Amino acid sequence: MKKMGLGLLIIGLRVFASDYPIVVRGADEASYTPQNLRPGIVKSKESYDTVIVGSGLAGLSAAVYLTDNGQRVLLLEKESELGGLAAGGVAKGSAFGRGAAYWTRAYEEEFEILKHIGLSEYEKRYPITEPIDSYLWDGHLYLGIWEEETLKELPASFALFKHELEFADKDGLIPNQPFEMQDNLDLDSLDGTSWIRQMPLQTAKREDEESKAIWERFQKDPKIDRNDPMGDVIGLMNQYTRSALGTTPDKVSAVAFANFYISELEIRYTTETGTGGAAEHMVEMLLKRNKLAKLTTRATVTRMESRKQSVKVRYVQDNVIHEATAKYGVFAGALRLAPKIILGFKEKEQKRTEILNRLQYAHYSVHNVHVKGHPYRATYDTWTKMPDGTLSDFSDLILGRWMDPKIRGYEGMRDFKKDPDDDEGVLSIYHPLSLDEVGRGFTESRARALAEDAVTKMVKWFGPLLHDHWGTKIEIRSVETNRWPYSIHVAAPGHFSHDAELLRKPYGRIFFANNNIGTPAFEEALFRGHCAANNILSRRNKTFKNESWSRCPID
Image (cartoon, rainbow, N blue to C red):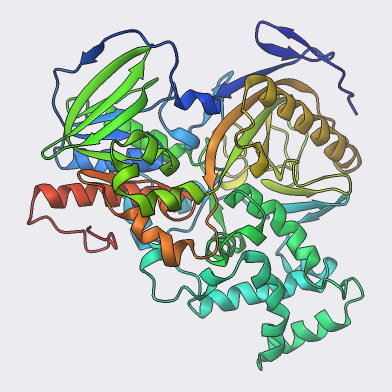
């Protein structure tokens, strides 16, 4: 196992004793407030139908559907590239994911959007080979957590949890977007942990033979801690929910938790760059529509104003203030910024501002570790819980190039029984940060420290496993750490029943298209972007109607 020593600073990079750098990407918390502005305002002479703030999946989805209908769009993105958190990367000709790792089997509206952006064959082209998930728990690797053979090894609480999750789905307790319009939101009154702890009582009441068998095994299993019978499952869910929903399940609505986790039992899909493939498809579409779509990066929006007949926006690019006007606006940035950026919102929308002020956010890091060769040969995603680990450590390890066509094997899937032809491996460490990190300052030095600690623990925890199972070792060439400040909002209990519908409502001529309204999910972002576009089109043309497949509420 390679040991890491103290490093030294050289031109903004941290270099270890083993001489590989950590490169920091992304922004600090302070990036939302531009500094050193030049005097004066540059006013755009161009006119737009809609200005969109944020080029993540929601902003891109809104831009696609608006330009479909001939609308001229100005899309503003504060980072140097389009795609937001979904954007992937390429190093030495090899593609890898930086953002959200995958999506699940699409419901009807999501499928229609995927089809429209050129991903209708995702089930054929992008399935992830099973087993997708593994669990490194106290030094033991469980392959395919929810496979029957693995469930026999794990405490019986895991089988019971899977059983009750599937029952909840059959019983209609797990909705799809838009959650706030569903009739059954019973689970929204519970947090995820409380719901998990109630599951044994539910199984005990069931009369079917499968439930009786699961209950009997659960009662007799010596591996179950009778003082905390679902504690082992909650240990795994702490890792998962931190990664997917920003914090541990005891702080998250059981609706959000259930909607996310039921999909973990099914096959999932990813492109060469994770969910970045969807962003790339939409960017390509918009680039071909250059007469309708103006795509502007490194543009930090400082003010939006909804007027009687227009929306005025100010943004900073290269320390210069620019001003543009459109007939409508789409706010596809983090909703927490709405009271700060949208003129008059805080004063006129006090209830919404109160909701947004209490909406918690988590910072997130993805450390892409570029390694020599392809030393890890287990599964796509490995959830990691070790005896010396804490809830401040990384949650899971993903193979960053699983779907790269250069290393695909049988039927287009990655085949770990064969060595790829190249030796450019990527191990992506998913690292949700504690809620306490917000406000601490996501500086470059802090980002490097987090990356160094995560990489050290990854080598420590996975090194023996690789040596014993495959005779391989981790040889690190470089690390790219990606900062995502305020990237995951916490959908707390009651969020969908009490807050989401109000957060969805437009403010004058400004519509909201962000997954902060519901869950921090791929599906949610695509849905909200399309829905914002439909709302604007309906305002512009009274005869406009939603597509037959759409459940978008027209506000």
